[in-house]
Every structure is written in structure tokens, then in C-alpha cells.
Length: 412
Image (tube, rainbow, N blue to C red; front, side, top):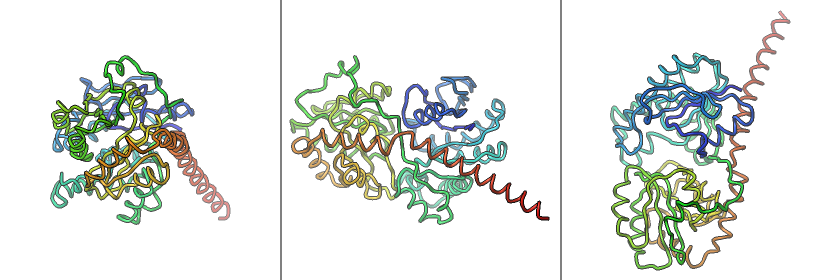
């Protein structure tokens, strides 16, 4: 099938990761992919073939490391810029329009594409906005801005033929809010192409870091923003300054970057690393002992951080400190049996989990449990099969409808 994939942020497919792995896998199955991606690193919009995929890189404003207002303005501007670029550079036709949240503002582009190409639409729901902003008090629940985003969210769900949710609780959350969506929802977990082996040789980057060999190395990698509630991590690092069995590595970027860098500047038991390439992060993950997953305790929506896949991929046990609404607790403690979960509201529990992971846990067994679970449940082949099944079922329904019409016509 011919797929038009839309994304707010251009990532070279050669780097791998959640979306590059999916697109590369779809391509390997013989599907024809065209990508439209927002990119603030280019001077002007450009259409080119990259890694065998027609790629339309659309010049947009910076989305990361900026405040909420600036990010919101960029999101609002994306549809107009996408539509203009698509009209100029793409002809189609396309069978499937594939896209993810954020941003929900792609609704206008999806509506335009659906009319233009008569294609089916599939939303990969990775972010439930604006409710997440309400939870963290970033946005007021009542007002002109919040009402605007609520309307856009409803329109996006309505125009999407299928909505793939990251977890069962994710699905239930949407269904309870709007029962009319029930038939559109399906489980579409975060997936990646698993590494052939969880063992990755250290490269020069890792050798330069010089991690302590006599301590348990805890890694937090990814976004450093309000959703992660980094105060919990920083507080734990401070409390454990004199605990000689744990060392922390924090790698990432985001709104809380300066706060994190400042707090860790002179910490004897931690180091901060600027956001790095996926290759370097994979090597870093392979060298560490435990992966950390963080979510602010105020969330009422069931988030499912994709970063946990990196830890499972390299057979690392996990400590997840999250709100009580996510499925992460069930995953970590009951299904994958790959680590420990604590409520991110309670610092003492988080510290106790860290000490327990240093002193009492069979980390190797926990890590292998997670790796085996990933191979069965988070392999990118699962996502490809779901998309193919969706399109095949749509084709069958269309053919069935046409046959019924022809049969009825023959009886006239």
C-alpha cells in the first residue's frame, strides 16, 4: 500500500527509534512510504529522496527547549505549512495517512488529505492533550485557549478512522470520555526493532565517561520536562549523596534542563550528559545497570513512556516512579516482572527502591525478563501487522459493499 506518514519532528530513518523503526519495517515489507516531517534545522522546505523514501521536510519553528506558549504557536502553525508544502510537492494517491500525537493540531491537515486522496486515516495516539496540560497546571481547564484545543482534539478523533492506543488503560480512558470512539480504538503499543543482542560493545564515547565500576549505575535518559517530575530524581540523588552503592547518570534535554544541570553540577554521585545520538545512548544503556522511568504523580491520564523500551531492549531492570493511573506498574511488576514500581509522590519509597535494587535484587534475571517480554510484545512487527490488518479489513469491507450493490442492481 501507499502510505503518507506525517510527523512533527524529522528524524533520519537511519538513527532508529520508535517511528524510524516502524517506517523502515513498513518499507521492508514492500509498502511505498512518503514522509512529511517538520524540521526547524533547515533554512527552507525541501523535497528529496532519503534512504529510499520520498521525504518532504517542512520548515517550522523550534519545538523543543522552548516554553509552552512558543511550542503551542508552533503546533498551531504546522497544518498551514504542511498543507502548502503538500499541495506544491506531492501528487499521490495514497491508501493510508499515518500520523501520531503530538500535535493534535494536525487535524486540519488530516481533513485536507482525506478529502484530497480519499485515503484511510490511522492515528497513533502517543499523547492525550490538552488533559495532560490540565493535570500539570500548565493550562487552565476553562478559557479560550483550552476550549480551542478541546475542539481540535475532538475533531482529530472524529476524522481518524482508527485510533491506536499505547495500552489497555489508554483505550479505556478514551472510551470512558467518549463512548462513540469505542469501535475506533485498538491496542497499538510502542514498538521497536529489537537489538540482535542486548550486549553492545563500548565505543570511545563510553570509554571517555569513565563510569565507576564499584557502584550500581542508574540511568535516566530522555525528556527533562514537567511531565517527568524531575524533582523526585534530583531529590533522591541529593538524599543519597553519602550512599556509596549507587551512581546516577542523567542524559537528556527539555524545559527542566538548566535545573537538572545546575543540581548535578557538583553532585558526587551523579553526572549529567547532554542529549546524544541514539548510537551513543544505546551504548550508554548497555553499560549501565538499572533504567529509571519517571512520570509526575499528578497525571490522571494513563501515559506510557517509550523510554522503557530502551531499557528492556538491553536487558536492564527498571525502577518506575509514576502516577497511579498508568499501566506501567502492571507491566513492570506483574507482566514483564522486570523491576520495581513506586508512586512518584513519595520520595522515601523511591529511595528505598534504589537501595533495594543495589543490595537485594537479582538484576540479571529482572533484565532478561524484560528483554524476553519486549521480544514478544513490543516488536515492531506487531505494529506493521496491525496496520496491514486495518487496511485489509477496510479493503474487504469496500469490496463487500460493492458486491452487495452489484447484487442488488442485478435483482432490479
